[in-house]
Length: 75
Length: 234
Image 1 (spheres, helix red, strand yellow):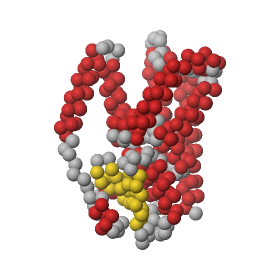
Image 2 (tube, chains in turn purple, blue):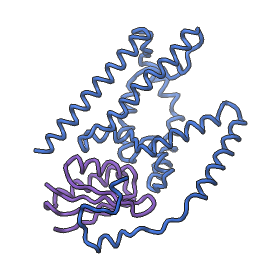
Image 3 (cartoon, chains in turn blue, brown):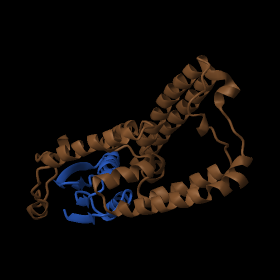
Image 4 (tube, one colour):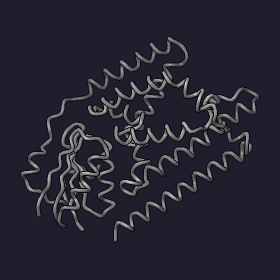
């Protein structure tokens, strides 16, 4: 199991989502992707997409207007 | 929100979690009170100008608040069906259109019944090639800029610096558009045709037809969503 950090600070929606989608393709089951974002729109669509795909998702607010979306690849 | 709680179901190494320790937050309450007082003062000052400008500020603030809290995004409503196969926001926009159809029809019909001039008829403008072309380039622009008009304003207000750039060129583009609008209107827009649905189908017919069309698009969007989701699962 490995952890992948993805820095998407300063990137507008949908760039964080596309980057996360591409990263997830390279990852193995059980790996965890941590996406750092500061765009509120991505805070909505990134978890929505990942949950829709069936992955485990958590959102943590790490600062004012900064979030980490933690995605565990389950399939 | 429950998912922001510390009780984590995903096991993360402590090294990555330590890096994400919460930064100390300054107390925002004094700023909130200050901004509120400034807004009330601005509202009163604007109202003194006449034209009900103060009320525009109030409705604008309410609209902005709802937009920000609900994470409503017109860009995503058009973009996500292609990108993620999700039509959640598309359907939210369709629902909003259905509600406003009923509301605006009621207001306009009220004026029509009373024999008064119908408000908002300035917005019944010809449909032309400019509509199609303009919508196409606006669509490209809003996806690159990460927001449509209202979305960009809302995110600048949230403090997302990158979109300050979008706002700057949004203003430049608006001025340019306003500058050339006369030419467009004369050579392209006025060659189109003008439709006010109640003139064609009657008031009741227009509302019913519009709602049926919205409903059909809504059903199509839902079917598309399901089809995309099951296609991804296999």
